[in-house]
Image 1: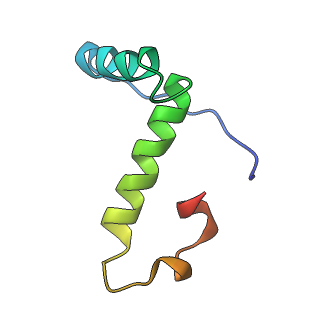
Image 2: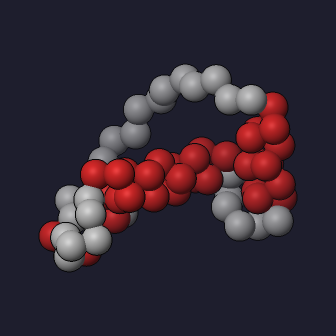
Length: 63
């Protein structure tokens, strides 16, 4: 896996509460993993159309 870098984002309390609920339910192990998953989904959706085969997506998108 590529080296991780720390970034800082500001989120409304409602989103933080929702992420914490997902972590508490065991959907994600921690906030960071939940946010990484959301960003991966966003990048897939916004940068790559459905006509691009998944096998041709860059590695950082599908990890």
